[in-house]
Length: 138
Image 1 (cartoon, rainbow, N blue to C red):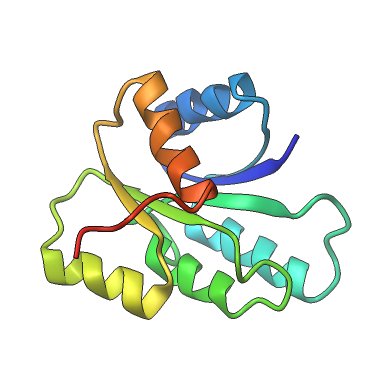
Image 2 (image 1 turned 45 degrees about the vertical axis):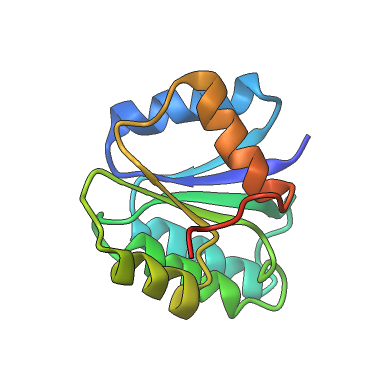
């Protein structure tokens, strides 16, 4: 059972997604903002985190502390988890150039727009990234 990292400042959304992750068989490493998540990433890289490393990060983009794309950029610098799939979610509209910048500059694999899709579609979208079958729009 892989651990999946969840960063979301809205408690209701965080709790719903956490339950989905658990139903799909994953341990959840959850954070309520970018500051907590950034401190966790620092602990990993400093050798202070001794538990299972996350196999995926799903993060909101806009929240207190570092934004989701900044967390993605930080993960891509990590000697331990730089290759994990990274999915960002947002309720805001993003231009195609903004989306390309997140993928190119920050290493984001996929962006999902809120409201989140239904349970099965959401799972499929995340698993496409995990399995390496997702192709971002060109």
